[in-house]
Length: 346
Image (cartoon, rainbow, N blue to C red; front, side, top):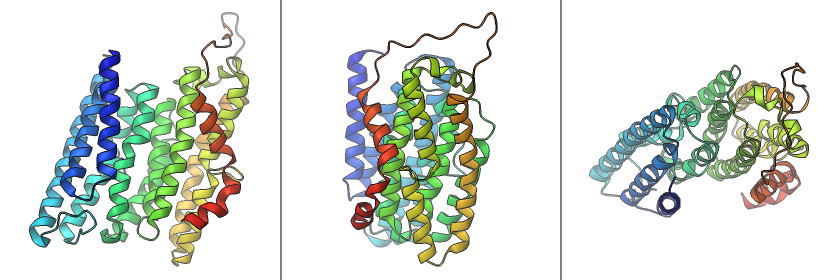
């Protein structure tokens, strides 16, 4: 891809995200989302592979539908209330349509169908952007409108996302699809607490972004696309493979790693709200995700590749490790002792 075109796309991506997360008016938020959509499309389709073109087409059609619904919802709300302020979402129909539109943009169940396919057709770097930065503006809109949204609808979608994200990730052999369903399951955790403590939603998103960024950067360094190649990555960079295992376990939410912190806080808050059944259900559903994280960790660090005559051992890579990988992996593994400070902030 042309460096100038890549620079323009990246700058537009940052601009669109900044416009949306800093706006109070529905129209400026919508403009920011549109800039984001148009900026990411060249990055998805830059390989000129048929799967990449298919992914960019699916992404464009889905995001255009969601943007249309969001604009329609804001216009209905402005028609009945005279308010374009994002926090003044009062009309029931507008609340329903905006919830659906933002859910489509995020990839929440039952609007998740596009997300695994788009990630499968993109490069690792683009997948990292789609799974983290591109979700920040819709999460911000959810945060600003959280007091107006239907808690029953959000809880149902959250439970369904945690269930489907865990269930569909069990039989995947492509690392990008595994991480796509992992993202859907984590979105369930973010959504379930939105009505009761929106700050926890943002904390969960930030920690998820750090951990997922670390995993995508490691997979990009080792050039790993399938589970079968995960088994041979230990010959490339053995220390990085060990850190990869710990980061996966952190994403699964095992103590004493960082990923345990948001799940602990969410379960604690749900219990305070006397939603013990909901907390129990989403905790049990997280065990499905734990299975495929453990499978990835097992493939990466414990299994040995078959030692056939025609098997060629992979040499240690000369590709330098991105400094961001070191930062994100360290934060993904060792942030749990800071939980008292996080509790104080939230």
